[in-house]
Amino acid sequence: TGIDRTRNFCIIAHIDHGKSTLADRLLDLTDAVPERERMEQILDSMDIERERGITIKAQAVRLVYRREENGDGGEAEYMLNLIDTPGHVDFSYEVSRAIAACEGALLVVDASQGIQAQTLANLYLAMEQDLEIIPVLNKIDLPVADVEAVTEELVELLGVDESEILKISAKTGQGVPEVLDAVVDRVPAPESAVEQTRGLVFDSHYDAYRGVISLVRLFDGELAKGDRVQAMGSEEEFEVLEVGCYSPKPTALPKLGVGEVGYIIAGLKDIEALRVGDTVTKVEDPAESVLPGYAKVLPTVYSGIYPTVGDDFERLRDALQKLQLNDASLFFEPENSRMGFGFRCGFLGLLHMEIIQERLEREFDLDLIASSPSVKYEVVLQGGETVEVTNPSDLPEVFEEIREPMVRATVICPKEYVGQVMGLCHEKRGVSVGMEYISTKRVQLTYDLPLGEIITDFFDALKSRTRGYASYDYDPKGYVASDLVKVEILVSGDPVDALSFIVHRDKAYYRGRAMVEKLKELIPRQQFEVPVQASIGKRIIARETVRAYRKDVIAKCYGGDITRKKKLLEQQKAGKKRMKQVGNVEIPQEAFLAAIRI
Ligand code: GTP
Image (cartoon, rainbow, N blue to C red; front, side, top):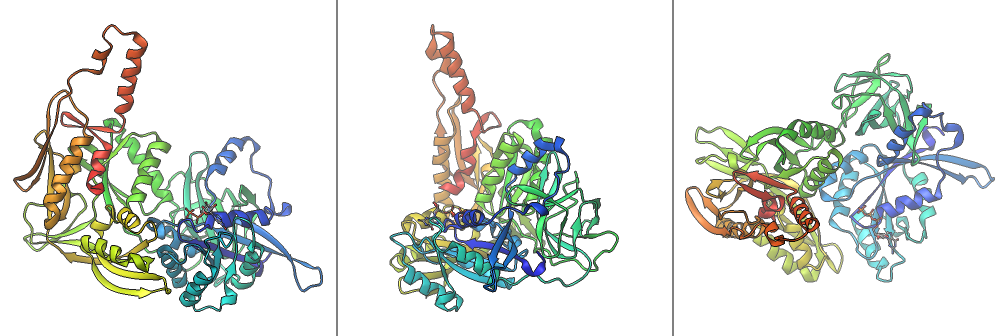
């Protein structure tokens, strides 16, 4: 297979429209990498490591597709590289990475749901990169599928002819073979611009046994085992220990050819050496210019992450560094507060934040607490200097002006829910920008909203008020000055910086009150009374008290048997997980997230 028989494509879709199911069907229909292309696995003794490698989620699968051509019975063989993209709004950044490695995209739309907000967001990303778009209407087997209406939406959106839209069921397999033909016939073959080797690193992963494993798209030249290679951004040089592809198991290959997608292993231990977005070239005949990398993504949500055990600080740093290799969008810097030593981290959204915290705990066996999440504010000080504030407790007492980040949000919903959506956006301090019918039944609303209002319960509220029929997506839209204040939370009379938050003055009283009530429920009873207060400046705006508990748990088992006693103590210990000692009070993780769930 040469470059003209190579096709690189991705599948883009709104969540649950059937991307993974379609990918599985495509895998079923094609064989793995042909025998003659495979290579002996380097070291048989490294079996465990290989097995480990398999557990890595393959994000670029190579399919071999053979079909009869020219009607003379002759077979042609195509190499199809399918690059996986995530669907959630927090990860549109990852989608753009995958897109930059492809020439075409299957745009999958659920025939029972129609075009949704992420359908549009991902489509726009693909169009910016000039990808060939193949519209695929999925789930036509569903009785509730409205093939006609959704076809109309796609024709309207893409300006295509109805005959260009593939109609399939990824579940039953109906129409799926035609998808492979469409990829071959409509997605352009890769083109190479220069002779020297240039590969775009579009994903990197740190493996404890094998070091850095990177996914690359070779735009020019080739890469083989034994080549000396340079990462043009980091200027790091290394030898290629293995190249290969996922089919879907990791399979070593003699080389990666021009236009191909695969992995390279360089045995690098320094995870900074081969960053996502960098270009690799050969040391002996280096390329002159780098490939366009990726726009640096900026975090939108910040939170302090602290180990519950103080001496885990260095382990946490190490874990964050390792995660950052997979995820260049993760930002962190050391921070010291009343919570002890930890890191201020930046995320692409709340889901991203939850995933990172979960991965840190599960993959690195850490026990962590995340502080109340915040967006990044711009604060003009009295001297005229502007500073950025991502930790509410850093907001100075006096300042000239505070500006908050805005987003332009797109909401798509059935027309009967327009009133509900407008009401919600209004409550969230949104300003309407426009409204448009995307079909006779469904409407697209555009609003400018403060990001701080969106990261809270916006999505949940939207879903519940529209019975799940609305979807939304957003893009950053600069900063605007606003009347914001800091609400501090005092526990036992001491301000707990990780609980304080910045909010619009009009909502400060209500939010402070609600927060204190929530904390009263969430903070477990201690052996003494714990007052919980909210204040703005010096003024206390709300107060509740967590009563002391009356008896020790064990007191109940006076005279009881020892196993029951043990069990109770264990229960008590388990209940302690994810608690942080602040002053003399233990505060559970949920309390730190309360501010965004009110
Ligand atoms: P994310 O990975 O979460 O973005 O979702 P996805 O787009 O990959 O969707 P996935 O393939 O997980 O499919 C979502 C649901 O739709 C699953 O329950 C599938 O079984 C179902 N599904 C996918 N394709 C079809 C189809 O053609 N017909 C029917 N009836 N169900 C389908």
